[in-house]
Length: 164
Image (cartoon, rainbow, N blue to C red; front, side, top):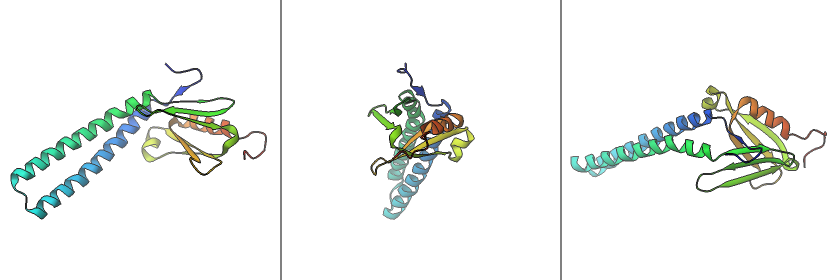
């Protein structure tokens, strides 16, 4: 159950994260296999050692793929945002919880971006640029395109003054 005024990210974001995770697992697995094969050839490993290495690679790759498939559901359940008169508040984190508050007065400008996988699912990432140097950019991924554009418009100052 969400606290008052908080909204969940778009549920399609779970699938986007899963696809991204499987691509990541595939790349890491391929690099690990190439490194393991090169090392085995360099030291002249026996078939037994090569078999153990291949088994370890297969187990590690499978575990990584499983983790990157399951984790997005857990992360989604612990992510929410709200926009009120004070500004934008983002809550996320399964193990290490994080609460980010961006007051309206600190917003300099906003961007809405889409990567190729997000675009295929009609999702966007809202990027809020704030005054300051450390953590001067806050990203909220997993929004529908319409929600991201609406949040962007609501975060910008309306009275014609610069936010800083």
